Image 1 (cartoon, one colour):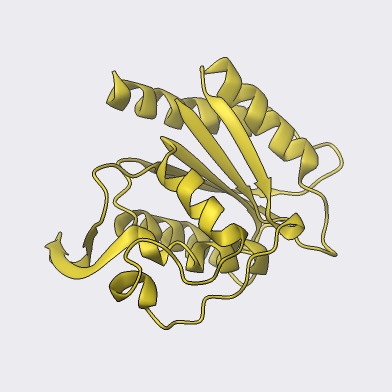
Image 2: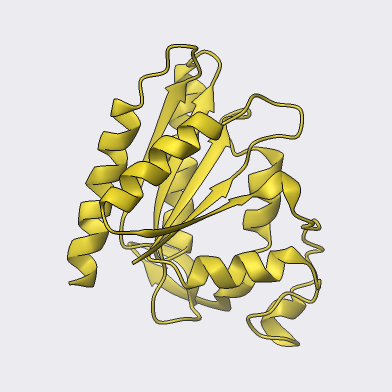
Length: 194
């Protein structure tokens, strides 16, 4: 099984290296082949919102940069991990920009899912989502907004499973909680692929 970590660490923000290391260790112990993309090191332009990826070049963004490769890696994974500082209850700019460029992965046509209209699938399978948000100090309102955002995004990405949690950035960071979270979703994804 493949897992892709989209690391949304900000250019001038705190490092998420030790959190990423814990996630990778646990994923590997659960038999995942793991790849991490440190988004701030990649050239990914903002989405232009032209929707040509739906009508002119179906499934492929017209912007020829690393965003195309990231989208291909995401759709070919069983699990995608969003690792990000929580910014106003949302993803970091680096992660949000990359996720905006994933729009070619869904169809422009709609279907009803649990009473709501969402885009149809373009592909037969989509990865499950694990979102790990990090804040200097936990703010409950922002934490709840973040979890709801991830849940809503998982519906749009047709993910079988979704888990999201926000952790406090601390010098004495305890990786056991993150490893437990990774193990829970890894088991669900593993069962799905058996």
